[in-house]
Image (tube, rainbow, N blue to C red):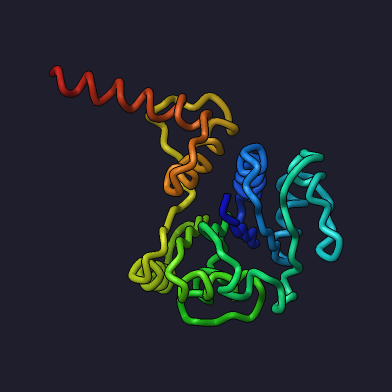
Length: 208
């Protein structure tokens, strides 16, 4: 399996990054992870987990003892993911802060996540960003357009409701499923809750 880079930044929605790592780990994908300083604070606030940026406890974060995740400090510009020589399937930034998004869109690489994203773009590999912000300014939108023109997948944290989610977990699974679906990776909680319902809706519409 090809390497997948995951960046977690300081936007609200740390649970999306957590669930994505769980899903990829369960499928034994080799993952390279980097977490921003702001993300550490969001994780503590939203998930009630106190983690250390210097000694990031992956098992504690994803509730998995067995995983294939390699952690890289946000300031380690010499890490393997900062070079195109590391072959990767994709890079996913989830959630993606507007600071990170705008920096990448304007060629700024002041930390490892931004550098790895820049490398992903220059190598013509898949980059997925999940922004979580509202309302959006014209600056945000212009920078999303810049990245979109560079073949970046802009996948905002906008869960659907046509499959009648019952819990927050359902909504998280929907967004994580969207990310994995874009990469051609099946995620059963998403497939069962989303696609099957959508197929049924389409079938009903076709007969009316």
